[in-house]
Length: 315
Ligand code: NAD
Ligand code: UDP
Image (cartoon, rainbow, N blue to C red; front, side):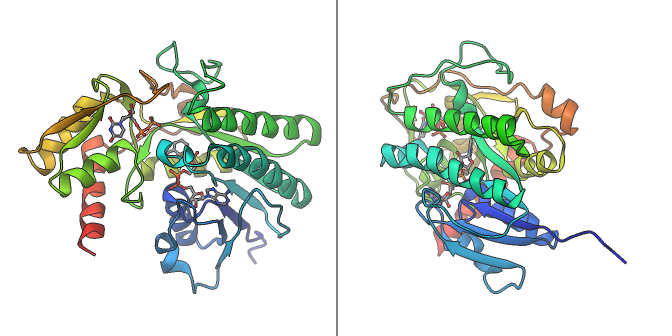
């Protein structure tokens, strides 16, 4: 007899880009999943294949309000992630990060559930060291247009750490670096989705600043594997998950232009305030503690993402 108890997974933000990719993986592993989302940046289409499945439930709910449900695992992803979205209502973004995390920690405490917080490389701000290891404390503006998100995630990490210290809560903190792939929204606003959608529509690619700022991009399947490995591990300190391969934004634009339409032009727009100049994960901890490293080449992930957006744009 298999005495292993089937776990109930709550995925907040489950209708979004990462949440819906995570749900696909959990559902394919025959787990029970409750998706909780207020549909601010998420799309019900992302989870529609599971709506009538007996192992799946969807609750339309805002994490800033408390909720009572029975759960064993909480994957706390609810929060807009793209700068254009988290800046629409920055006060709401701060509330989502603080109150949303506070409510989910309360729920985890009541249920004695393990909780994973989706944190971000943004907690390092505009870093003075490259790559960024987990013990780098960051360089963050507290009053700028990105602060609602950056500081929101920092206080969310603080809350998790204090619940661990004071209530012995079983926490996991994943610091996610820029990730891309299928199920991003057309209007997501982040660089890879913007460039692909612009290129597929024959529009010029919008480069902010001189395009020399550096990012590293992780394909979503790799990220989700790392997230699941972290949840299953005993590691309760913050951990970076991302792909260390670096690109300038101009290099990304050139690759996407050559892949989709070599005739495209670039247009240059001003660099948004506090836009980090460089960002690259140090993933030594993930390699050692989780035996995780990214496996997908940027170009392979890009082709899968282009295919996704081509199909969406045909609808
Ligand atoms: P997304 O915007 O696609 O998804 C966020 C989801 O959260 C959406 O479905 C949205 O409707 C929901 N949501 C937002 N506010 C909510 C609220 N108050 N109550 C309930 N639901 C709410 O973003 P994503 O890229 O899937 O990011 C998911 C998580 O991962 C976020 O917490 C984000 O900060 C983190 N993260 C993502 C990246 C990345 O590159 N994608 C990088 C770093 C961190
Ligand atoms: N960016 C750009 N053109 C766009 C969208 C973004 O040049 O159409 C730049 C943006 O200024 C930043 C980088 O690309 O320097 C990554 O932006 P994104 O919003 O994807 O992520 P983040 O800034 O949060 O790393």
